[in-house]
Length: 357
Image 1: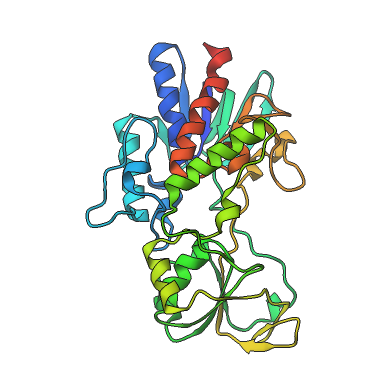
Image 2: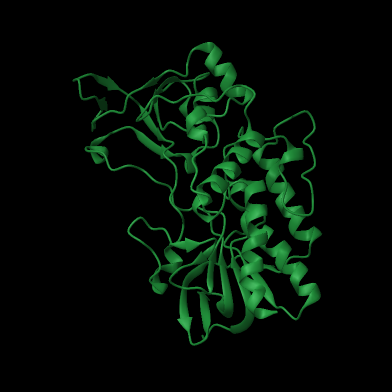
């Protein structure tokens, strides 16, 4: 059976924080001009990736500093730093509040050229658009480094995407691999019920206790402006790697945040280091990050060897009808954060709609 075809001005792919921020500004343009747009989301329910995070995850910033355009995030009772569940509820209400035209579940398979338009193809139909804003994030593309012997390890291997709470690891010997915030927050609670070892490619550094998401966004913004002017200013990496949220500070004070260097290979029962040290583990938890989820853009020929897209601002250099939003600093300062995605979306929509209005 043939799938339906639609013609619209703008398609936004993804209804997480970046896609909803784009939808907000598109809605404002649509109120002034004759603009038709749709937001396609692969999820069965609102909330983006926030519906999948581990149970105890906390934002780095208070609610009053974690907002999408137009509406401040309400505080979560009893918590300065909102939980993932609270953020997911906020995103769901945001959709309703601004009456955003989200279609779900619609999993986009590919984006291809179709004359003067781009065709956004899914099993539910094809949308032919004058402009496409890709805001699919990275949660669906977890990264695990290729290390020798992984297939020989007889224990359990899991990634951040698989982790919800420490219960399944209680009493086990667990290696937590990765030097970022996810690793630190998960290790903090996992170490209460399991024998944990933190492993990182370089020694993780906790940011000062008074530095949270508010300051991180300011630093990222200052650094981007300086780069545009050919100057260098202090970046986040100059201060540290890990935000010291309350659970991480408590784990630090217990002395469990000392990291071992990266191991060299797996053995059937554990891990082997370059100096010959071998340790037994029941499980390895990979907190090694994600890659941009951009496979749907492959037919356009815009992906580089690292799986990214060369952009000027948020516009693809090789396909100017395509914009990318929310994938990291290369698509805007702190654009993978809630407040950063919102600020970047304003410029992206202005560029994407300017020729249309």
